[in-house]
Image (cartoon, rainbow, N blue to C red; front, side, top):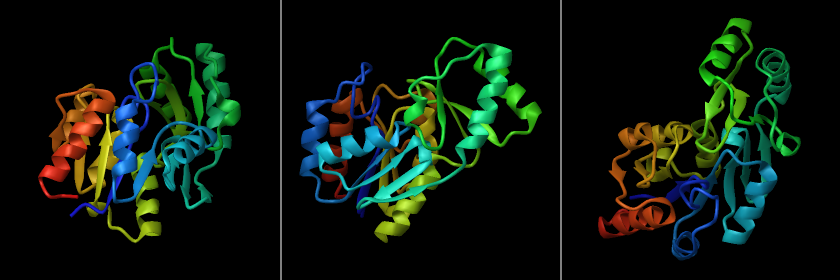
Length: 222
């Protein structure tokens, strides 16, 4: 049985414009198991979304911030990300986006060679990595992922990760899907996410999320 549902926000509960799907809202409010929002968004954005959706648990900044019943834990040291940014800015001319609100990572404006920048960071031996969420490029601490964040939430809830469903659309969702009991992807998901999923929705975005929950109900998982 599935005892909790972990779900990404952008591209999973929202459309490509980041507009929240009314269907997503209805489905979340009807669920009888805990819902965990797991996202690359900032802590303040995610907390606001959680309050509006009636959700008590979330993982923000790709695993960097964990909150359960307003008990917040910050994982990682943003100083490493700031150091990496200074190197990348000098070499690639990159710019930050909304990073003043971030506690553990940085977001970069698109338009640079991500693969070349990643190789450059590896040569500097700074323990960070670049992650493409489908909506932005993040500089984040290596080893801090949506999967590590979901593990911490599972410990707080007392629910094993194998009893948690994980639903997403971008490669950054794969780490949480790999440890979950039921990994699923919405119809618009990246091919790597679909490959990691046990169930792939026919429909995209919020409609796909609703389809996945319907499938779980009809299969007796929740």
